[in-house]
Image (cartoon, rainbow over all chains, first blue to last red):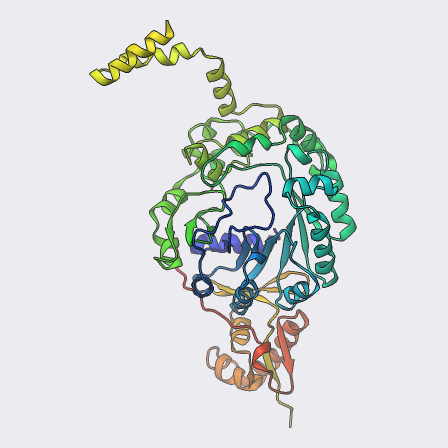
Length: 383
Length: 111
């Protein structure tokens, strides 16, 4: 982020303005990626009229950066009508797409409409790997063709590479492909749970040894010794710091109008079909709670050596069961980076090594006939 | 007699008012600018149909205590500067409506 954009984002925080919003236009998709966190069925997407009305409300609320994403945005037949409306309202527009449906005419129209950047998911430079992840034969070639069309229009393209078990050897190849195509490159090493809470896809995470190698690759992290150095102890200022922009200057709206602090933070704060966008932003009790949280309030992170330097995601923590708790995926990243386990990882290790008997012995202490019955049963198991 | 100048907001920029300032991102290289209050007034009034002279007289001289000739010189220099960055269009003829971005006034309050 440029210095001026950071300054403006800080100003937005002071003014209470939702500076940046991700709006998912649909969850439908023409790819079926193995790691995707979405349910692709249409459960009643907002209509064109509803979306245009929402865009007007967002502009009036002061939203500047608008990311249009999905699902696959080009699955909506009214995509360009929505984009035209958004540009007429002078949003700074970023698109996220697999680009499979972008040909020369679409690329030219995107340029005419003054889109700031287009982020395209590329999982490998090898078709057999990329297409196995998307489950669509020929998808890599079509995405690469689209990148060429977009670049020929002078547009900014970012290749987004999610790292997982199926492609963990290929990130250097994807970056070389980005260089060849004149695209920017970004790497995301975290697989997130399904939005409905199903955590089975986390098995696709690339694992600690891959992360450790990545964090020592100076072509990615710069000075590896500095990047992997032990974290500085959290000071008084860091204890008062905000976890991230979710709910503070940024938020997310689903294709069904549900309003969340972030796409990775499925805490419903309201629905724009029933309330004005600005009213949810200002008055939602859920958002007020999210905004109240500082590092000092976090159950284990406030005691952790990584507290001030960790990339802890409050949304992933919420999906683990507690928005004030740790985000284990980020604990694992901090550990892979520095070799120092977080308070959360140490506690998990201790719990795993403690016999179940100890936990069961707590139950008989609870009085009451129903609970006593459970206690007896547990004791029986223990013996 | 000097020719009239018409100014219009470029349709290829992103813009939003944030507090007292106008935040503008030019399509040319994703460059970000903030406009001060005077430049913001000029940019918001740049509808392609009202001559620059009239904008200065009605929107700037009425708002700030400045000499009209001096204000006009400053406004021309500012318009040229904004045009260089692709934020404003300048023409000696009125500029068609479809080439103009629509400014939106945000609702804002401190929290």
